[in-house]
Amino acid sequence: MTPFEVYTTYLSVKNHFTKDKYDYHKYCGKTNASIQSFYKRKDRYWFEKLSRQKDEKEVINFFVSNFVQSQDPNSLWIGDIIRNGESIYCSWKKRNQSLSYVFSNEVKILLGEFNIESLFDCSSGHPPILKKYLDGSICLETVVIIDKILYFTKDFNKKMSDDPVWGLISKIIKKYDPFINIDIFKYRKIIKDCVI
Image (tube, rainbow, N blue to C red; front, side, top):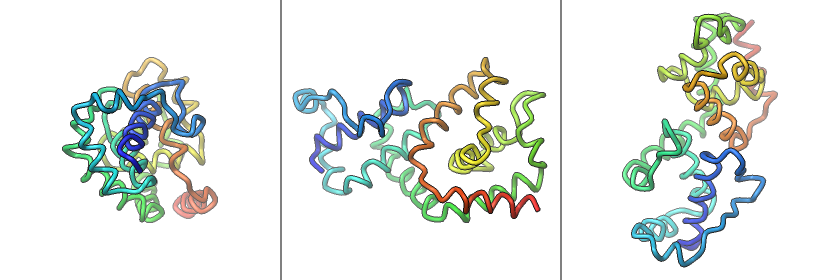
């Protein structure tokens, strides 16, 4: 990849996670960035360095991992990615390389404390699945995979429409979903095995 391609990948991934109407996959990562705007950036050296270190898939995953890890993707600055990006990417990569193992362990944690119905109970505020994500007991990938299987976000969006915390997490789940390519039947079986 050229440094400019790394820059446009950064912009398109950022747009995907911060703009409601932009979809990275629908637009194939295209942006309106110009080469002139790239050369005006004071941080372009970093994009040049990244272009020498990573291939196209790694660059995409690098930016995705940093945006999904951010508490607020809108305020994630490139300087933060430069400082902490590599460690975040390494943790993300490690988690995704053993995703079925991580998912299985985290589902056991969830179903060890709650039955499947109470896990999604919003009657007294945030449901347990959301609390477990917020306290770091389960990772975002587990939440996204459970939503791929059980479609709970639609219900949460109705019941917690005024909740700013859920609003942000709901958007991240929706935007991250297309980047998680899994065998849905395998993960559904993991949940069934834990319920039985």
